[in-house]
Length: 108
Image (cartoon, rainbow, N blue to C red; front, side, top):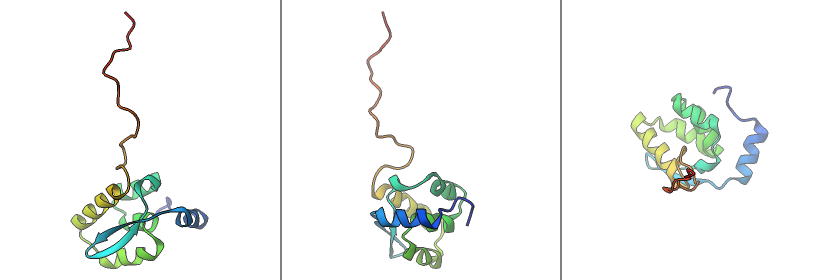
């Protein structure tokens, strides 16, 4: 794991307040935090292909060992994380803010 792991107290708080979504990986249902509850460290782990760290951060604690034991392929992990990101909410980088008006605000 990297330095970006949560403290035990942070992990307990997330687990206590989180509603996990279920996403299948190789026929196994795993519980994943909704993407809106992911912290930047979760995405850093994904970008760095540190999937074990990502699993320890984003999955329900009881499902982490299952994720590691499945030893999924890169394609399977990519598909799994994509489905996990879209399962409950927006994918990271998309804003819920209103779109820009087509009307100009320039003074005439």
